[in-house]
Amino acid sequence: MSGAPTHRLGAAGWLRANLFSTPGNSVLTVLMLALLAWLVPKAFGWLFLNAVWGPQPVAACDAVRGTGACWAVVWSKFRFMFFGTYPYAEQWRGGLAIAVLCSLLVLSTWRVLWNAWLVLIWVVGIVLTFWLMGGGLGLVPVRTEQWGGLPVTLILAIFGVGFAFPLGVVLALGRRSQLPIVRSLSVIYIEVVRGVPLITVLFMASVMFALFMPEGLRIDQLLRAQVAIILFVAAYLAEAVRGGLQAVPKGQYEAAEALGLPFWKKMGLVILPQALRASIPPIVNSFISLFKDTSLVVVIAIYDFAYAVKKSVEIDASWKPYFIEAFLFSIVIYWIFCFAMSRYSQRLERELARGAQR
Image (cartoon, rainbow, N blue to C red):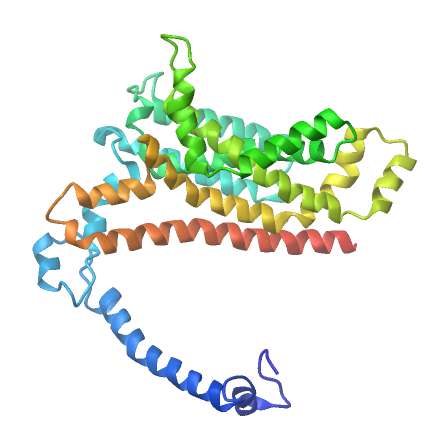
């Protein structure tokens, strides 16, 4: 019997049923407890008790090397980690851009703003973000080649999701279309894009696409990467949405048709709300994968957050031995964003499920 202890079994009964039910389970339980008893104190000591914190010199880290973590490397290199090659004196703009983008995400979780106001907020936020990062109108211009760090990761992920999602919905509807040409084109696009890795799409957008451009015409590297990510993720979102469309009972389609609703109203008012509610888990899974896959833009010489963390310790020989701490810090940052998306999706599922039961 699994699950939490019950009043009938009690704690001892639950342990016996779940951890010591057989001789084999008993041996595995004892071995795991012994491993944890040995590993946890060592890990806790290295991570916290014996670690070097705050703005300490590298000599302080050398003194505890092997027995304690050197979190001083994060303090020393955090500006390069977060902003990459962005001009040092202008990095406050990158910090404000991060704040704007995170604020947009938080505001988007408030269902009371799911109206025209949210669209206006996003338009203002997008304009403000690119003004802060790119400059102009009183700010020093900064070319996109100098952008880097967490702002680039957030821009690629957030705008990638924002534009890929409606394209994915259109592709999902196209794949279920009654028109053969529309259905065939949608199927070909989805299957071709899903059949190649993202790194190939990025390479094509960065290198091969430029070979077919007219002489003298140049499209920004970051923009090409953004478009490649949008086109790639849209194919996966299309399949997630298609699964939701298939989960909607056939009676809902027939009821909408009986009311005489035209196709787009039938989809927008009746079918898609139910389909998207059923598609939340795979859609959020695609969002999380995209957020982590933005690190692949390093192959086309774009400094995302993960690459900026890597270079921050590589370019300084004195801090290079503490690359593990730097990467652990980047893992925590990625985990915070991914965990927040996961928790919000679970909350949204519960809220929509309660709304559907009313």
